[in-house]
Length: 174
Image (cartoon, rainbow, N blue to C red; front, side, top):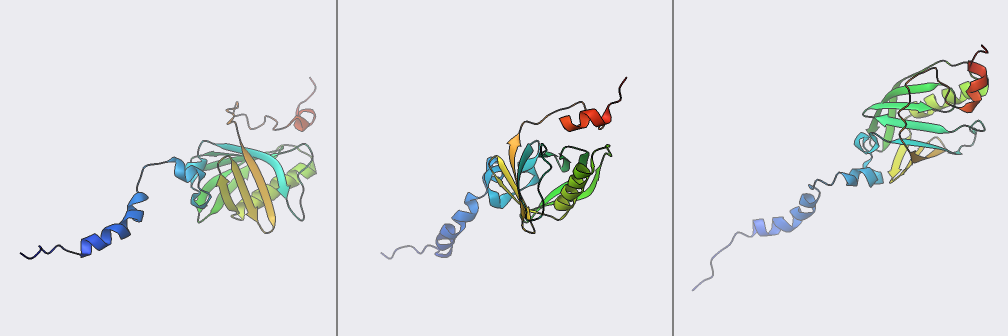
């Protein structure tokens, strides 16, 4: 008796489809830790800070750090002077920040310049790699490495100094 004929095409397609089906799981941690899959979801609710800047033409003002905090598509940042904010997006491995603005504290020129540099750096669409708790941003020969930090829920006062250096310059004697 001859063997029954079975369709060969589905049997050949199944092994080819397995790798595609394997990516359909619901592991939300994968995007959080996969450097190639940076998303705003991976950054949401997290803060990063540090002073590890490798740049041919810039050094951070002594005693300051860069701090970034992500809340949905909102980015807040500071470098020891003003509170900066903007709209963030992750696009093809880059952090795209638009609509940057900030407070206008009476800080020294070096820290004002540092705020302007950070605004321009973030606005340039730096390459962004998130490797567990380390966020690395790089553009035009400059690399900024930030480590995850506790998310601070401050008092929301935009006139509150962001570093001890502000205390003497923003408070009146009285």
